[in-house]
Image (cartoon, rainbow, N blue to C red; front, top):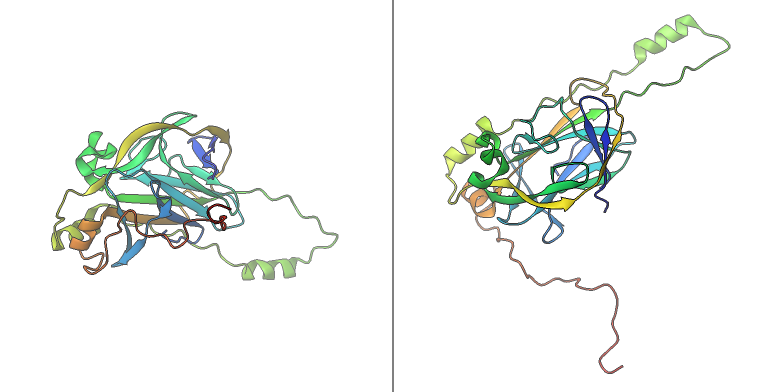
Amino acid sequence: MSLHHRLLALLPLVFAASAAQAGRLVDLHVVDRESGANLRQYPHRGETFVAGAPGHRYAVRLVNRSNERVLAVLSVDGVNAISGQTAATEQTGYVLDPYESTEVAGWRKNMSEIAAFEFTTLSESYAAQTGRPGNVGVIGLAVFREHVVRPPIYRNKVDKSSTAGEAKRAPEMPAAAPPAPTGGAADSMARRESAPVQESLGTGHGDREDSNATYTSFQRLSDKPYEVVAVRYDSHRNLVARGVIPHNHPYPRPGQPDPFPGNFTPDPPNR
């Protein structure tokens, strides 16, 4: 899957990506890059959680389910994944073409490099290291639709009464989804109910990797996002302690038997 990106030239700068919590326009999945698997999502009290493995690199997989271009402003631990600013919805983000998907694998450093996302302790996270530990443990996505200027339609005859009637029956645009809660109250409540048995996970500033970017253009249909998607994360042990994952749920072990380890039937020995 391609990791090339296109960066918007309009202000504020917006990146576009060529690569869940399911959104109406964009799905968000967290991918463990060591295994290549999407992390299982656990619903809990209206929120979605995934269990990360300390030391593992990960990527955020975005899937545009619509037939239009969208802008996805991505935040990790309350930090914009492109600019490094404390995240806000009006900031720069990734643009996906209709039905396009991408994997965003790190903090963007320049037009050709990223620093890998990797699960680490809260104190070693990029957000904490830059003095912003308050929202560590959440990945957020604010999705914007595009304002597209349609060419005028010319007709030989215009029935004004009919046109007025059609205007009254025209469906209203769906309202923007309210921002999902980040960090703060909901997460604090869960932590009070059952304190983690180890330090919570955060996202570190990993090794540099190649990831090219270019410019494109995008005009937002609204100043408010059409939808906001959030996925919270912590270690498997902490999520069990907090009641997010049932106690009898097995811990994912590396090296478990794979029922489909190959693709084709090999020749037998000595053949």
